[in-house]
Amino acid sequence: MSDTPTGLTTPPEGYAAWLVELKARIHTAQQRTTLAVNRELVWLYWQIGRDILARQAAAGWGAKVIERLAHDLRTAFPEMKGFSPRNLKYMRAFAGAWPDEAMVQGVLAQLPWYHHLALLDKLPGPETRHWYAAKAIEHHWSRNILVMQIETRLLERSGTATTNFAATLPAPFSDLARESLKDPYRFDFLGLTDKAQEREVEGALVKHVTEFLLELGAGFAFVGRQVLLDVGGDEFFIDLLFYHLKLRCYVVIELKGGKFKPEHLGQLGFYLTAVDRQVKHESDHATIGLLLCKTKNKIVAEYALGDKHQPMGVAEYKLLESMPAEFQTSLPSIEQIERELGGDDTLFETNAQ
Image (cartoon, rainbow, N blue to C red; front, side, top):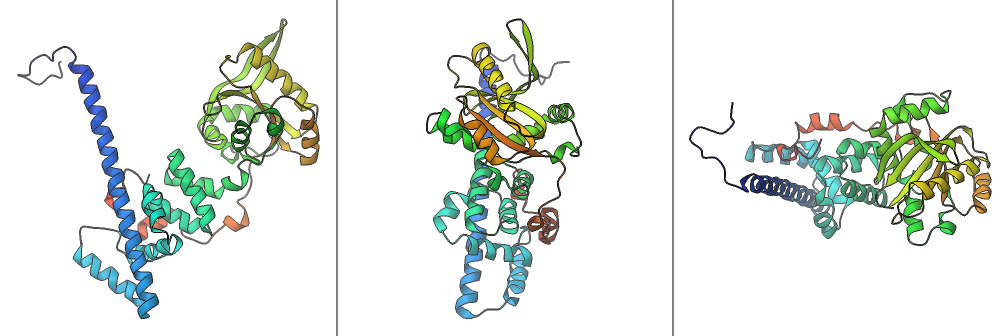
């Protein structure tokens, strides 16, 4: 049965392509509208929080005024949610944490309100909050991904792998490559214990490749597992091969189930040479190697990398590990906050998930 309504003529030539273009325009306009609404609401919340701070400081208004304000705003705007006493306190905290009006309007208004609650609850100071806010905007993190990145200490782990990039890659490419690696990598999502063998970890990473790519970070694209290289008639197999879209190069990842040993880099270097000669396109940058091991002596790794002329990095990976004590917070979860605030502002439904 045709989907064309009765009485409509057959569309003329070029109509289908035009319709696709119109749909794309409408979708873009919808996104812009949502972003504009989000900016206005975050800006409004900051202004309310700023006014509460100013009046409490200047006139000595006590905490009770927030309860009264919540009641009066709910009465005046019964169709709007988000005016609970708890959310008003978050507005006050938001304004106190970000006193720079230009920063709020220019950068922070790009994030939905519940992203800001996560930043306020989970992070202690403006520097770390600004870093995670910028990353959330750059990579379009959902609120849950933002919380996960905070709790797994992404900031502390970024750019900390032991590498020889400064000596083997040109600047500023070397800095970008270094910032693309972490130490340690967190593989808690695999559900494996420290007794897991290399092949077991490797297979689980491929099975959970979405989570693995998220842990690797933005720019990594999965190419294959146990990638065959034929060198002089002998077969060799790369554990994991990726392509980094920003660095424009292949990344060879080798897994070692024990402690780092200098001889591991000889095998990795062989794979880099083979990929550069057999796989790499002439427009690609030099292939980078990342050796992931359960443990490493950083000084030994630095010595081992010191005489290598190919770009390599060494980092640890962690399987099941308990959350650091400083993150075992008594602060409420995001879900508890949502329930307390009365179900979120409907304006944020498409952005907050």
